[in-house]
Length: 138
Figure 1 (cartoon, rainbow, N blue to C red):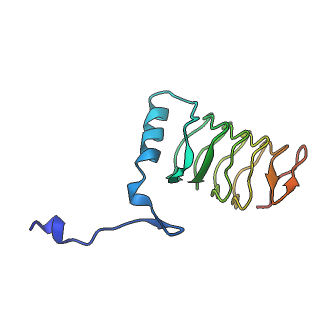
Figure 2 (figure 1 turned 180 degrees about the vertical axis):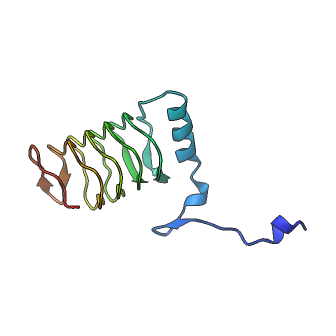
């Protein structure tokens, strides 16, 4: 038995979900680093995506149904139009000029996020539909 085998395994648990098996987030970040900007293959069935502290400026997530941590991420000009991002965490993220047009944002967290110029028109939370220039509570 090696020393590594005898060491306790560290696992990041977010809302009861084991984040150590999050290979999909790493794949998306690698695709972004390679120049891809359109991501339409994210699905809540893949588990929780962890994009914390990531630079995803200008990424297009249109139409996805995902649960993710975007804490402290740079999402300037990102497009989340017609996405289901219910319960996703955007705390402290840079969402300047991002778009959530027509998205479901129920229980999404925007604490401390930069929402300068962010569009939530047509987005909904718990039956409420946001109008032009309206922002969710932070």
